[in-house]
Length: 324
Length: 258
Image (cartoon, rainbow over all chains, first blue to last red; front, side, top):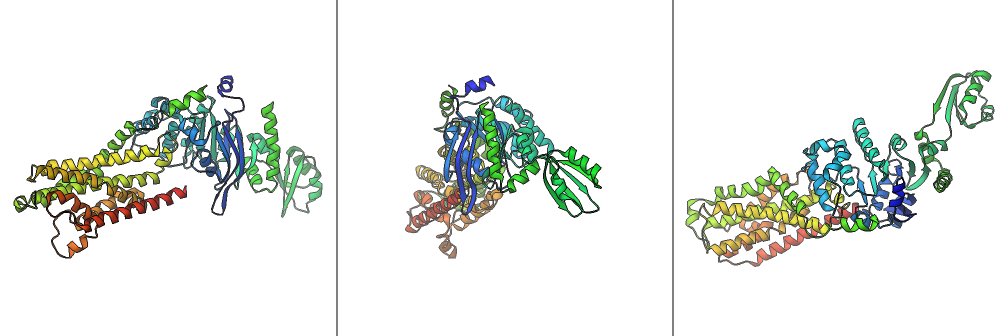
């Protein structure tokens, strides 16, 4: 951790600094005023549904597309410079490999494009493909190809690795192997930004989750913070008679009460007292308590008109934390 | 500190030819059985089929016998196949995202294109050399320096078809471009008078509009006394423009999409 700080050229040089990014394709606003600062050593999940602008943002930060407005700085450099210097590398979603080459040939060829790289054997080892060096790329599974892309990204020993939906189309085992390889690498202090629409991946592997929707950031914080945005749990129960929703709203910790025919759904930060009340003071039956996961937070935030306000609140929390 | 040292080390390999890449490209060509058969096996085989009739060995076309005339035509056919498949592979590799992957490395686009062109030309040279190596012992004779000039022209002139390959590569489905272009080129070569003399009939009239026709006439000019007709020059230039403009048009559309 200490060495990570020392290696950073100047205090305050961000791994990634995106300001006011905008990009439209025809009438479609793919990215619509996006600001993001990533500090060295962070593992950030860029989370959003398809079409949220994740890939467009990644293309811009890698210099594969030019923003209509705004600025991109990668490790204090222009994207093209950062790539030429081997300081940022990327694992793209699909393609980008020659099927008729072997795995080892691909690694050696890509290494030749750079002036100095880590040894081929080492990056293959770290990506977990050391045993399939002689296999033709076309004969590799989707997961193996993805770990090959990861090995290629490790070659220049970059400060920042960007991954665009790296586990799309992988089976469960392939996905686990891939994340194990990445996680081992993140432990070495490298900055990692990955786009995903798998909420569990963001939850399990990132220090920080940045949620995007319609080209904007709608939430930014740790998985716990993002979850707590949409408070607590949902208690639901059935009633035979009339439901006194007003009384339920008056209970401590209750955020929202929704009546669906004979069933009531109560969103609360204190599920215990709601459950106790329902079971002792009312004739409620079939009581259920469900935790609100990241998925709920995600749906709530990306569809909520108040999302922008919420995002600001949590960003402030995040900033305070980083100053501490 | 590392921020200053790393860029200079990593950018060192950016410019100039990358020999590793060229070697890999040549290895890929040789490994591709279809490419080898089309460019290195079919031209000499076609030569043996069409060019070794006894009467061809004694009949002269000016400065060489008909057998030499057909040998040179087949060498051009092989070289055209090589450059066409080289050009087509650029668009195939774009479709596969390889060129996009390259943009994430310090390799310059100029080096990429140069590597593709050089490897295609090396393969084309292979086609010319193999055809000559089969043709000369099999009876192709004449003015040696004129035959050599024609063979060299066949090699250099085939580069026009790199643009044809690039253009077609964008128009046809990526996975089997050469499966389609192979027979198409055979047909064009046949119609353009590469495989046998056309005579004066309808075929000869049609041939003037076929892309291989003008190039074939220019390449064979040193061994014939006929010189180069205006039609041949117009043919080469017009088709050259069509290929280059077409390739550029598709290339731009393809880039705009990203």
